[in-house]
Every structure is written in C-alpha cells, then in structure tokens.
Amino acid sequence: MAEHKQKPESNVDFTKSVEQHTKRKIKARENEHHNIWFGLGMFGLIGWAVMIPTVAGIALGIWIDKNWPGQISWTLTLMFVGVVLGCMNAWRWIGEERRDD
Image 1 (cartoon, rainbow, N blue to C red):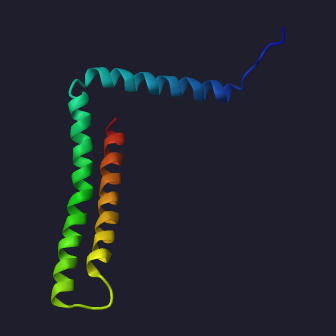
Image 2 (cartoon, rainbow, N blue to C red):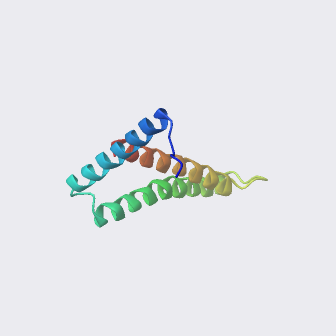
Image 3 (tube, rainbow, N blue to C red):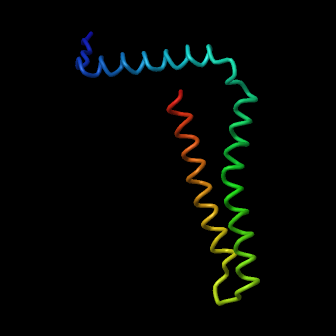
C-alpha cells in the first residue's frame, strides 16, 4: 500500500481551517440571540435597506416628472438608482455581519 504524504503547508492550512470552523461553531453556540428570529429580523432589515431607497427614488422621480416633464422618465431612472443604492447598502450590512462572526 502506497503512503500518501501531504505537503506541510497544506497540513497547516487544513489545521487553521478546522480551527476557524471550530471557533465559529463555539461562538454560534454561545450567541443565543442568533436564533431563527434573529435570522428573520436580519432578512427584514436587508429588505428594508433595499426598499427605502427604491421607494424614495420612485417618489422623487414622480415629483420631478410631474413638475418638469421631459423625454426621459425620472421615475424609472431614480428607481434604478434607488435599487442600486439599496443593494449596496444591503451588501454592506451583510459584510459587517460576516466580519462580526
């Protein structure tokens, strides 16, 4: 039977990976507030983070289109801008939460 030898670097990487995974599991067990309701709340928070800039963009676009009609639809343009800003905002929230974990 042939021996399978791994490189020392890969053993170190594997050990670090297992250690990080174990630390995350222990931290998750200690954080009792991270339950199903926390997850649903975070999901709702991200939804609001996207929805508020989108609705604000739509409202501003309707107002601009009503007062200064033109060839382009400011409602659609600002709705798109609101969605992009909201998604960037949600991305930031998720990134912060991942860093905390």
